[in-house]
Each structure stands twice: as C-alpha cells, then as structure tokens.
Image 1 (cartoon, rainbow, N blue to C red):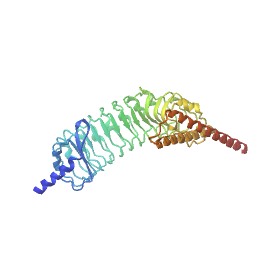
Image 2 (image 1 turned 90 degrees about the horizontal axis):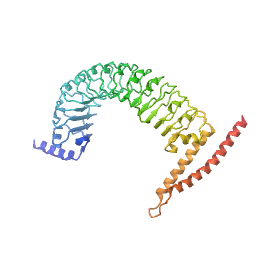
Image 3 (image 1 turned 180 degrees about the vertical axis):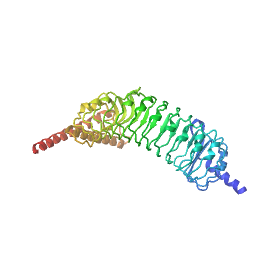
Image 4 (image 1 turned 30 degrees about the vertical axis):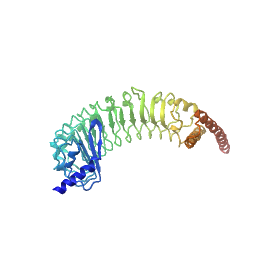
Length: 417
C-alpha cells in the first residue's frame, strides 16, 4: 500500500507540470504514449476538469475521477467500456480510434453533451439514440449504413458522419436545431430530407452522388457549403442565398455560373475548378480572398474586372488574351498571387505575363535577400521604394528583351507554316 502511495505521489508531481489551461478557465491534461498508466483516479488531485489520453493501453475505466466532466481516450485499444465510472457527471466523451463494439453503458450518461466515436468500426449505436440531451455527435468512419437511430436526437447542433456508407438521410429530417452537418464521402444522392434544417450554417457533402441541389435554396443561413466531387450540373438554386463565406464546387459538371451574392460582398473562398465553365460574367464585381477557376474552358477574363482578389487561380484554361490592363483592373493584392500557367493554348501575351511575373518575383526576392544581409551598423535606406523602383526598371529592361525575342520566335513560326 505504501509503495502504491509513493508511486501516486511521484505521478502527481510528474503530471502536475503537464496541466494546461483551456477556454473559460478550465484546466486539462494531455498524456500520450504512457504504457504504464492504468489507474487514473489520482488525477482528482490535480484540479483538472478534462483528461485527454492517447495511445495509453490498459486504462482502467472504473477509476475515472468524479471531478472530470470531459474524458477523451483515443487510440488506446479500448474494446469494452462497460466499467466506465462517473457517467452521471461526464458532459464530453471522445472514444475515437478504438475497437468499441457496444455502448450500452452510455444510457447512464444523463448529462452528456458531446460524444465522439469516430473510427470504431461496426459499433452498435442503438443506445446512442437514447441520448436526447446531446448537442454534438461525431461518428466518422464507423461503417454506418442506417441512421434512423438519430430520429429522436432533436437537440443536436453539430453532427458529423463522414466516410461512411450512408445513402439515405431521412433519419435526420427532423433535427431542426442542426447548425453544422458533415456527410462527406458517402453515397448520398437525395437531399430532400434537409429541407427543414433551416438553421444550418455549415454543410459538407463532398464526394457523394449528388446531382440535384434544389432543396438548398431553402437553407438561407448557409455560409459554408462544400460540394466538391459530385455530379452537379445546375447551381442556380444557390442564386437566392446571400450569406456565403466559403463555397466549394470543385470537380462537378457545371457549365453555367449563376450570380452568387452575399451580404458583405466578400468571399473568403470560392472554388469552381475542374468544371466546364466558359463564361465568367456572373462573377463581375465580386470580392474574393481566394478564387479558384483552374481546369475549365475559360477564354476571356474580362468579366473579372472590378473584382478584388488576393489569390486567383486560372491554370489550365483556354485564355488567349491576357493584357496588363486587365490584370491591373482585377486589382490583385500581390502581383505574383495569380496563377495562369499551363494554359491549353497559350498566347504570346500570356507568355509575356508569365515571364514578367517570374522576373518581378525574382527581383523582389533578391531585394529582400540583400536587405536581410545588410550589416546592422550600415545606415538603412531612407527610401526603400526608390531601390525597389530601380530594380523594377531593370526588370522592365529584361522584359523588353524577352518580348522582342518572343515576337521574333512567333514571326519565324508563322513564316515556317
């Protein structure tokens, strides 16, 4: 007994140093790869509210301290949680990446607010449907086919079921308090059960079999929508929504854009790459942090004038005309933040632009390097802009030489044909 007390005292001293402070004044401890950790009851002496264990096999669940309201045990090889103690006090549970088959004991967790069982393949989840007080549930990659057990969890605000085998989602049609729903990498095609989920602000449906998105026109609170890698042709149902912040539509079958507005006129990210788009007029005058248009059939970027963009991707299109004036009117924050390489039919103007970007980028990199190499004792330049201007003038001189050589090349090519 004395040896056990001495060991616990040593453990307390060791782990007290690992206590971390989280949000709202809460304290927690994170322990990883401790194969000797079995009895965790002594953590009650550390004044922590949450305990996070990862890759610590052999944990005795009947020693969970009563002081905890959060328990996170990941990758610990758990197969059975029937001995789990302190269930009536726990509010947050995470048993991700274990081998748990049954969760019957969780019906005693009357105060549980969040539960994560990610990557516990073939777990029987019937009892989870009884936890009507849950606000957050995460069931990623557990082989789910049927989700009808969720029908009574009407207090859920966050639900994640990525990487499963779900095809029908009627089981969530009445979860009207949902604000965040993640269903990527499943086999979903029918979105009609989402019609009443009008509080959704985040919806992730990447990598499914979706063709029709008409139901989304009802979800006016959406500000983040992920629909990459589906079979969508028509995005006009999105035209009436105005709260966008992030909209991802990569790798679909979209050939026509619709006017996409938002209240602040500022998108963080719009990705419509890998589609069949030719006309950019619906994007006129919008503001984007990142606009991705690569791998389409775009020939003319004039409609992007009066747009404000931090990062623009146009690689692998059919742009044949790209003048300097157009680049200036697009008002990119950084000259080298536009990506236009690998066009399917590059024009002389486009090759000039690419070369100019390379020259100026190299020039500014050299300027920055030279500045960093200056001795601290040397007087600093009073006007760094003057030095940069001199470098740019030199770059323009190089540009003239490159332009003349390029024109000569194309004249010779035309003459030979």
